[in-house]
Length: 103
Image (cartoon, rainbow, N blue to C red; front, side):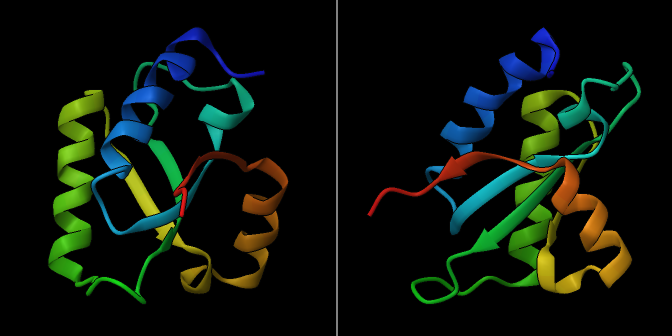
């Protein structure tokens, strides 16, 4: 079960992603398990909208920095294709959908 703190972060993340080239996003890691501390980062698995937008490393870095400013926490965003198989298994066990772009 997620904490109240994480519950309060989700609408901020959703609003932010609404103006970004993100199709779907899942929370995973300690925040998704309700085990986060004040020092925990926010781990987000993302699916980019590469069909309609150019998603560069600079764009990804800018999104992460903007989210960190918004949430006052370190943010790690990663695509499933960038994870090693053992890490992907762990992420898939923890993740839950927090954002999906409406067509």
